[in-house]
Length: 495
Image (tube, rainbow, N blue to C red; front, side, top):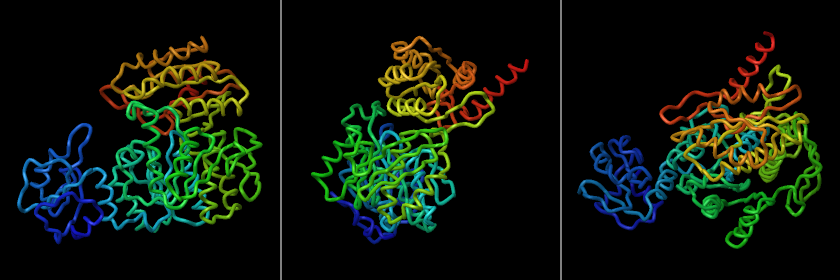
């Protein structure tokens, strides 16, 4: 693509050595990936600054540089394009380079503290039931139809990769894309250049304050998504921050807003919920009438996700009969309110809940579904929001009959320091708790405490397959660990 075509996407402050007719074969922001006829975008980062590697990129063949801070040297044979924000520019350049692939697809972006993953999978299932080929970008994996694409450990990849992935989806004949949009991704401009038809706000509760510092900053990052939506904004109207977002959107955009929740003041609301281990029956009240549905995934918070998915589907013309049939048989979502099948005399629930609100909603749902005692095993991440540790401890002590506090990716911190912080909250509510440093041992300890008819809740790991320690990352699988615990208990009982 000619450089002059790419530059049409940018607001340019200055161009030096303008060779706008040169043919750009690649865009990169890592100098190691630069080669002949590359456009290198120098991005200031938190660990290092891409401007330090401009010379390296030129040595490897880059013929054009996009930058925001003055360069140490300007080569006469290289074109330099100065912009106000090179990170912001990267997504726009990526979209132009890959032919604005999102512009010819239906794209729904989902943001919020909780529910993003479950909602993307619900949407994908509904639209595939209608015969659409769909892409998915999210926490667990990226998907092109049924093909798994590595997400490189990020919920929202860097903006250039986002555009490349969407191009792959478009080339594979995907008509729809359902995308988790994280607060980090929004703050770091990773979805710049994506045309969103739908923006969905699930909720906002305490998480990631180690990065955003304040709730207001966290909210502002989430709210950025809705500046890019061109069709419908879908907001959880029960959430206080969702209510605030509705007021902001009403004042700044003509894009329609549809609210959902359990409060009858919402445009769509759920009532008469019946909770069972096999799923939830509920009545959905819409602007055109009422309909009873069954959702094949248990938990009240899953009903919220289902409502948002239903609104998108109805707006895209999918018949309610197709939506109902899909929700009735939708498969469970990995590590999300997942009931593990074993031959233990007690139930086991695995969930990714790792924030105060998600843990509380999980435990509230478990209380509504199961009648036996609840034994909870969980921990908090290291090197993350430290303020939430005692808060999550208090929530655990409020709802669980027995709490086992253990590790969950302690990273560079001492695991017992994290556990002690959590326990400071637990002991405010109960004295029925134990501490076990190694997570696999914690799961076994929790299982050993269970009596017939109890439910063992394993929270925090969900789909993750690793345990991040100070000097190493270990393979860890919550499902296998739980099954091994059940097997050990069986052997012990037989002996």
